[in-house]
Length: 410
Image (tube, rainbow, N blue to C red; front, side, top):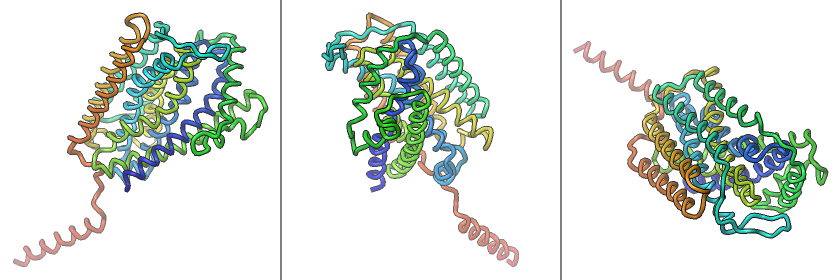
């Protein structure tokens, strides 16, 4: 029953996050209307669609229910946070590009007259792919190195955040152009989509622009209000994901980082998938892939880095060695590095991405999932190591005292 409830929570929160991120996208499109292709996807879209990973890690790390009551160790939820970002990164790297390419191959790209043209091959800007790939691999190597210390300290999180600042600066430095007309068309399309009720009515309820301003056009101030409302809803929904991660792990009797690497990773990757597929069918291939890779960089540098920085400053260092999960998390990161290298090679070698490469991408995710399931089933580490209740400890102390008195009398 607990497992079934956890799955229902994951499904419901995924729906809420998806439509809240649609509202985020509408506002982000307006705020990023002067950005060049590949820039908005790597920055605004990536940040918006990666907020679920950020809030989930923050809640897993700081939430008193998960950090101490469930784990019995301060900061132990960070392992599940790493697993969430690792699984999300693999999902983003292989499933999102694969689905984006399949969408234009079989559904087609929307043309100006409203018709759709099927594309046989998707060609990417290899300079953008190379730039994002270098930063992604660099952040992965830094995380792998820091995990080898077993103790994660505040300055490590600060270094990750600094890496993202450098990445964002380089991405944005020459990332503006004046293509206003195309963005107005995209905004009209987003408004038309926002009028649908959506699943469980969430499309209507979470269309913050329509709820707050009706048919009035966006302004910068209104866009920021919609953006903020979407962030709040995403943050609340991620509390449900954190709850489902821990309770599904308890129901299955496996460590929580294995449920996080599959369930939470898929749930938090819903926004990335929606945004990238939308960009692909509009013909914005560079934005579609840049969103996926940029989200991965954000996941490591901000979704892990900022919570670690805050926790280290206000609570203390995160001792991975006492969680019984450091080795498994380290293995996950090395596997992710291998997957990332293969995916970047597929993007950079040859003339674009066609059906054959998408099959390889989906196969990689199948192998990844099988590996995670195997590790979860064969792991003998307990999910929860709860400390002994005080009453039991007191009774044990009393009995030892009585035994000592008996031995003394004898």
